[in-house]
Length: 185
Image 1: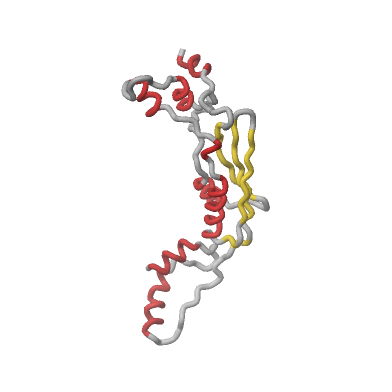
Image 2: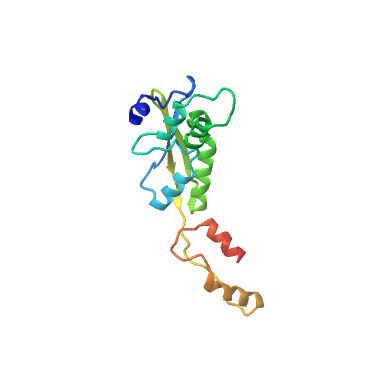
């Protein structure tokens, strides 16, 4: 019976006619492949997250659509079901592609890529939409060698003591966050 109730609900029921239901974002590289950890980091930065689904069905969105808006009071069992267990639709109008492009570009730069370019493309179907962020990360910079002074001054002695604890390793990509943490320590 519950399956019949949810199968009759349309997930785009509460979507305004001039808007689309947001299905999510993807990240792909224009040239070559992105490292899996970099790609996962980029996907975590895409906002907003689409409506949650289980086995391909958006049960929380269906529950939100199935229960009518309460007329008198904002209390009660059905109101709790609608707003606590249900999930309102994530609309394309809430997505800010330019902000997300800048955020993804900053992430690539902070992970050692010079002049990254990110371009978002919106794909619209009948009642849903998704965004693909195409990245051209540019050249990846690696830390070739860390230089520490060899003179006998007091400052050089302090620097050489901290050289063993450095977070910057030769051959690894230049991570701005690791560089900042290294300076702070």
